[in-house]
Length: 158
Image (cartoon, rainbow, N blue to C red; front, side, top):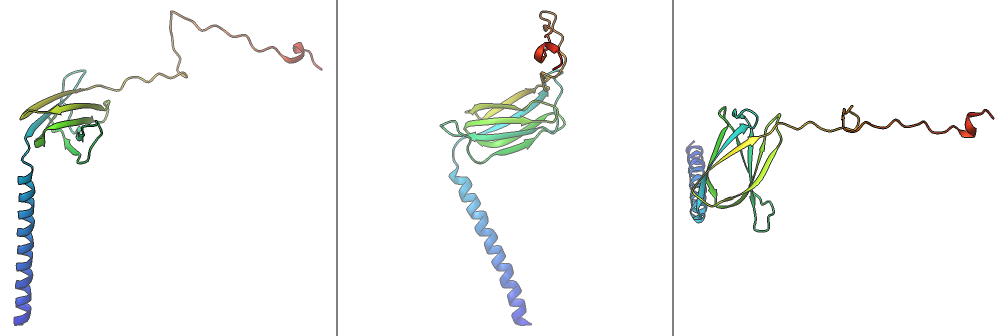
């Protein structure tokens, strides 16, 4: 009985020690990132009427010096007022993409170099797709009627 109780205490102490080591490691990593950071806020609106777009995905991709997309994407969702925010975004170039159902995908590179930035992004509705199979009425030019191809042997039976 005494051995089982000591074993339980040992497990609890080991878990506590492990947790403290993890917290110390996380704190040390945060202290190493002493570069400047930005508080970014997003306001996502409908272009046609200026109303907020709720539940839009706002994705931030880091961009390296060569213009290539880096690792460590961040994704936010807009609230009912079309707002989303993130604290402690490191300075540098980012690609911001906004995806929302019923709207064109937005994507643009931005340079983050100040403590606070507000991005106001207006999403457009999808454009009508052009199809060669649809009937197009164009008054400036009417398609010419083609003659059928000539029949073999001048249309005479063999």
